[in-house]
Image 1: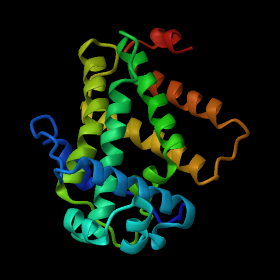
Image 2: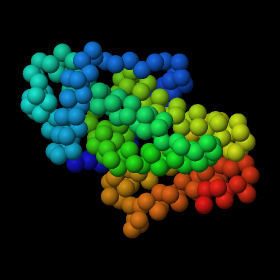
Image 3: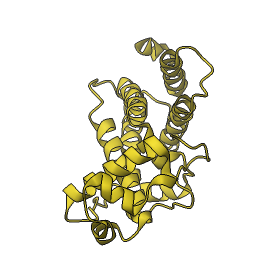
Image 4: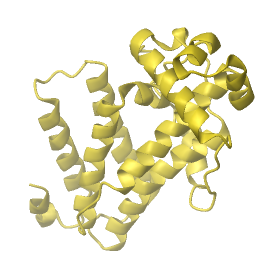
Length: 227
């Protein structure tokens, strides 16, 4: 159950992205097994009954742990949602990192765009916590925003490579990457929220990626590679 309550703002996200290449990701708890079970339980509850149904008692029951374990690991429910947020972006970063099989810089970005949509559609409840503000009053910690910045860095690095190899027009790689991400997010959010106006969202999304990338090419004749 995805509640339509707005979208994630990026000002803080972009500020953290500037730190992402030098700051390693840290894990908030030594017990990854407990953390994973509670995160999975939270996502299952969000998917079936919405975020308002995620309580310590229900989480403990779903995850098969004592309620005190949740307090010990996360402090409160804010900490649980923060872990879900961080988990989602860590998984997204890995999906983007492993998606590229082409040595061509532009095709590699096209592959990343496809991986982004697949992640969102395969993990709609995680994506909703990450981007769609389904948890009222939730504000991610700096540590979790750093995980988000690492996922953005995958795309930004790929864009920089396309600029450096003179496939893309000269520009600020972070800004170009943000433009690509914003367009992909918009299309994916519409699809997840069942607001896509076209019968075949896969075709629409593919066409969107091609249009975006063609507009960034230094040599328009190279657009044939995207056909």
